[in-house]
Image 1 (spheres, rainbow, N blue to C red):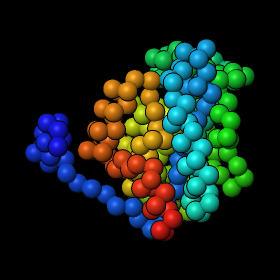
Image 2: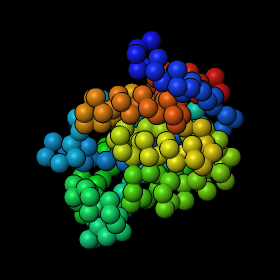
Image 3: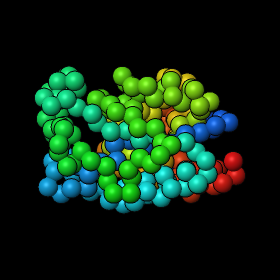
Length: 207
């Protein structure tokens, strides 16, 4: 155990959460901006994106409901309020920008839930929580981009809405490895669980 883990354990951050009876998968903002080297939001996350493709395919095969979010901004970005003012790079999501389109292989399919959003969390200002409750979901597996922003915000809101949040380690990514790892560490300590993809797939197979 590292010094950081020992410090957190000594402080009482030792709880664990188990998945419930019915799960869904949310893939947060799997868009071209993060894999287009000409875009300011490019994050070098091609490998996590490939894992997202595998994960969504496996979820559908296992009967796990899939929700996919997308940024839905107005022409001037004003519906994203302070967030848009703080992060001008969000212009990559303005209507008509090719960088706001879904990555190939991660487009929503018939039966998936599409969640338009304007802020980091997949829950804030959206109908995702109501949709999950209507489906009897109690556990939310989380993939997508980026770990320190939309993934952390979505995991936090999932927990606050009463869903067990489980972040799929290989299927999330961020522009800086140090930031990515620090956020996974903190999510696992305070918010939910961080599972390797093999564990997720084994759990779905068993269920």
